[in-house]
Image (cartoon, rainbow, N blue to C red; front, side, top):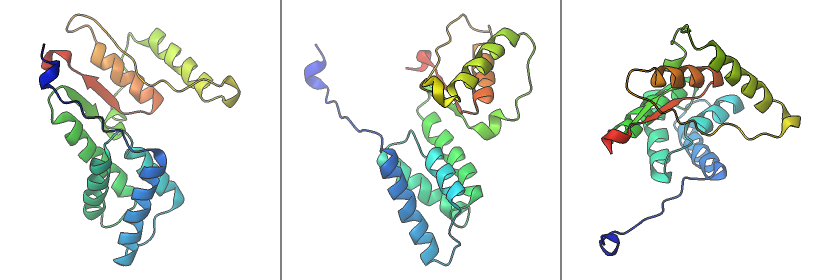
Length: 171
């Protein structure tokens, strides 16, 4: 019985409001250093790119990305995705592929039926009157070499989402 030797810590992800506060703080710091204020669209994109990280990682990644991009601007989003990929992939069991890398993936033959289903689901999700929650995840199971990762990346590309692969054998 190992339970008595294990301490469980619950570290919730920051809320959207908290991420907005972190970005606002970062913007103020950059503006104080003479950098231009980002557009509302860039701010929203930066906030979206920071989702899925812990509170301290959110602060750290925004700070490092804003240094690399010389302020908070369109380039910051790419830097956040690169840093997020490195952070999430560092443990060995997760592979994070940012949207910017998935966009370069060519269309692959043999996935037509799957892509038609994904496109239909995307259209339905994007229709406000449908009241469907967005897809939060998809699990693909199969023997090695059957195209699970390719299918996952194609789905992520069609949905304009990053691809996150969990390698159970690395746990």
